[in-house]
Image 1 (tube, rainbow, N blue to C red):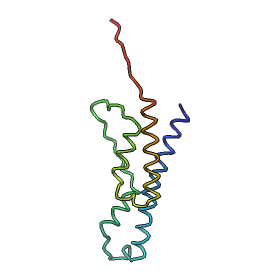
Image 2: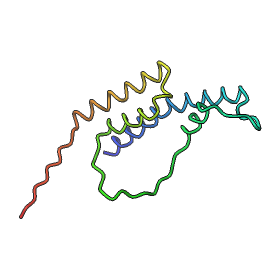
Image 3: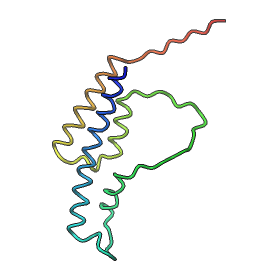
Image 4: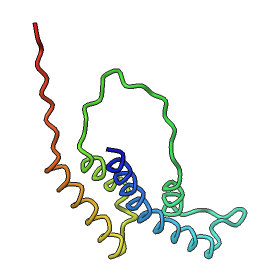
Length: 119
């Protein structure tokens, strides 16, 4: 169980590195173009690249218990939110391989919650 959780975390970190690398390259280009000089205006693409490195903190507590999701669905949601930063062939390959692997694992390990109420 622990190894499986660690593997899932590693997969998240690996696919996250794909869009972080792209965002970093865009930020380096922005620095080279002088977008961070005093008084310079940043392009929207530069602001988007900066936002990749921001992690919003939210303390909101949902009123309902969230439904469990398959890990492949979680990855797909995260990837969809960073699609603009998955532009290289290598990055697309990494994301596709991990997504496919997790979908296969979810199909094999599809948990069935079978609860019986005794009266």
